[in-house]
Length: 221
Image 1 (cartoon, rainbow, N blue to C red):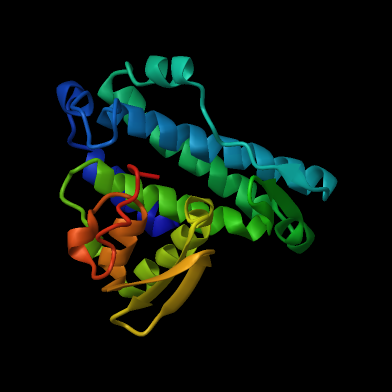
Image 2 (image 1 turned 90 degrees about the horizontal axis):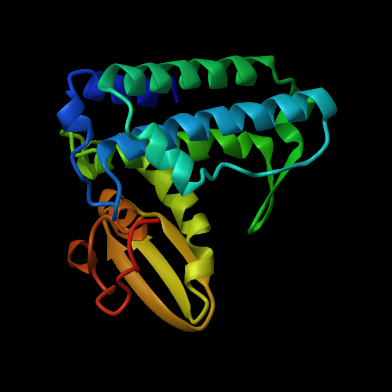
């Protein structure tokens, strides 16, 4: 997580005010929107982590930011956006360092069921990695460390499960990973783990994998 944070901060440090306001492939989102989203995401997880440590009782996973606040924060100058990314990441690290073993094992209630608090970590790394690619500052799926690409593929296939309620998706990677999600007619999709990750997250179309011609996902997730 620290490595993904430092890479993001390093990739964005040279962006100007105008550069931050350039639109991305995410509908309606500029680079500044992504920065605001990532800062809020870190702060929201930090709050949940603090609650878990204080009570050792399940909490509800809440990381969404309303559009009005998101748009307002996205109008900040480049230095404010960069400072917010840095400071929110530091706050998240402090919250994680304060958690004990019981807090890490306590449940977080999501729309897809209960997960241990340790799921904060892959979710945060996923946000940092995928949104760094969305920023279009020179980082792409093929640059992701292979072990990390596999972990993020597994995480995003789990997150995508509600999107496959009429199809049983069978993912087989060139590197030897096999994953199954959904229910219904079996459809097998093959490719490298980097390309499968790009496809599952809606950043790449079906041309980068085999067998997904009828399964292009409806936009980035």
